[in-house]
Length: 229
Image (cartoon, rainbow, N blue to C red; front, side, top):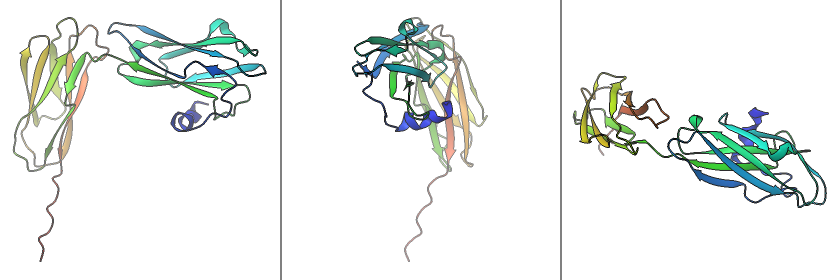
């Protein structure tokens, strides 16, 4: 069943929409930095003239536990219910959309009646801009700078910076202790195309990521057009 979810996440249309009416099929939540779980309710009502049975619900993420209030699955005309999604925020490291497929009895295997979308806004504790630096082959060995801003209530320090390629040298500069830093990257050569990752570790107590990865690369310079004859 899970292998068939890609289709409906992208573009499939409901075959049985209207048998249950959800107050909303999309919601947005903002979580706190130290929040462990987040609960989202999707109320609905059977506005049709016949019984409706919820056959199955599937989330696209192991971070979500999905259930129906009182475990009730069959709804008579006029009856209401609530589908509840509980997110484990330790498994949701960044702002994202999460989906739940609702299959009613009689739905084809590849076509759920409803898709519920939860837009989860996760505060950025360690904000790195830009997230990649690019040089062209033949460029001068000029430094480029990344700015690291700590959006935590407590001061956050950078513990270590390591590069996967020794030709990219880094220098850490403190702009405001515990709040803002600059990482200055200087290549020792731009003769060859290549890519490296830069791993930045902090001592944040609220950041769910043990480290942040940014990318450095030397890319091919565009070839000059041949001179007109």
